[in-house]
Image 1 (tube, rainbow, N blue to C red):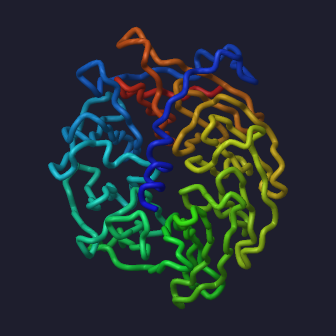
Image 2: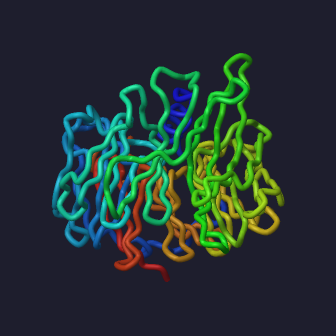
Length: 412
């Protein structure tokens, strides 16, 4: 199970496609002033591109993670105004920055930055780059999965036994970010009916009694014969009881690896190619929809509510807006790219994959498509998926494999 999850959640987002030669709907018109490059700094000293899957805004500065270039300077923070480097972070136990890549392998929360690794969890001080906590699973026979999620003052990680893929159990553990200490067990899911479990992707809410309710999935696989199964679980943490469980939810028996979205007392959950809308309190299905006309994969896709629309960016580079009430597709733009996290500035959405694209979510129109400056290195340069938006200072930070850039947003 671990091998399959790593393949789907790590390898797929890193795959890059050639840009489409066909024009895109809603091509930008006279938008050259939308992005203004404030500064750019090199993040590699040779001709090999650097993958950058995580960026965070901290007090107007930018924290950038890079991979595939050894342990040196896995994380760096730069002054948001000038691009001057403030600090570097590394650890000899991490052989390469690629070991902390993934959809949600890092989280910035309450002035602490969590770094997720297979064997370790780090918390560092983002002000100075110093390590606050280094933690391992409670047994050498266990390892962390890369996927992490957060809710209120807590960060959740999945722990599976080593030596898979046919795992006898899966566990959710948590960290109290305000009172840092070793991880604590939250939920233990044993193997059921020969299905090897993986519990992950936590979201939740407080019910009318003040109880903490958590939502997460049990993503399972049975190897003989090969068959998947996805259960969505609603768990009352305060009472330590299962409120409801939606068993075998997805038709494809596969699912997206991210936490479900909660909006207007509804749950939005992505299967392999369908989006499901469920009642928050009962788990009853309201609708399901195949948002892409090509029925492409949603396994590593990002989805988010923006401008009262459910925005879905699938694995085949389609970008779509769905009506959260009916599941109807409002607009669709092909060949936009695939970002592992949707970042927006109000109703402007940014997608970085080959090009850096700004999209008007209200209309489903491209505002600007910024191409990388290939003259600075070579024609292979393209924007990586991870971007960060500084809302207070109206800035976007992106990397093209060779440079970290700060761009001022100038919406008309």
